[in-house]
Length: 85
Image 1 (cartoon, helix red, strand yellow):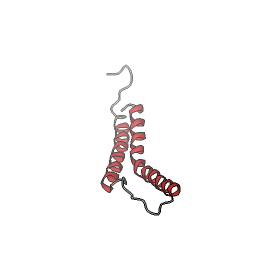
Image 2 (cartoon, rainbow, N blue to C red; image 1 turned 30 degrees about the vertical axis):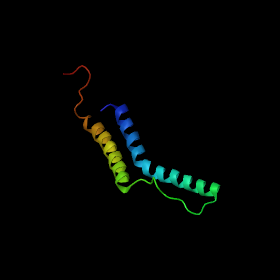
Image 3 (spheres, rainbow, N blue to C red; image 1 turned 60 degrees about the vertical axis):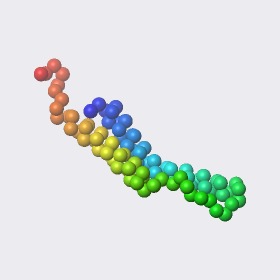
Image 4 (tube, rainbow, N blue to C red; image 1 turned 60 degrees about the horizontal axis):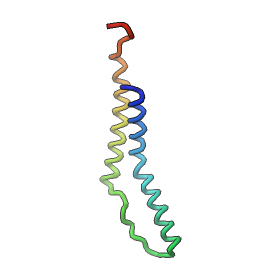
């Protein structure tokens, strides 16, 4: 596997893993901002990620990282030096 592909898989996998916590943080900031500006006492918390979606993001991110690691390590033994057949 090319190093650039492995790096891209690792970065995208990490971003998928970080999506649910980042979404929670931004949603919390939005709710606090809304309550502070409008002086309301109640806010409906619609739009929160479901647990299935969170789990899916985590699994997809881990899978991408594993593919990058296994692909990088697995391809090392099969390469031949330049000029050899």
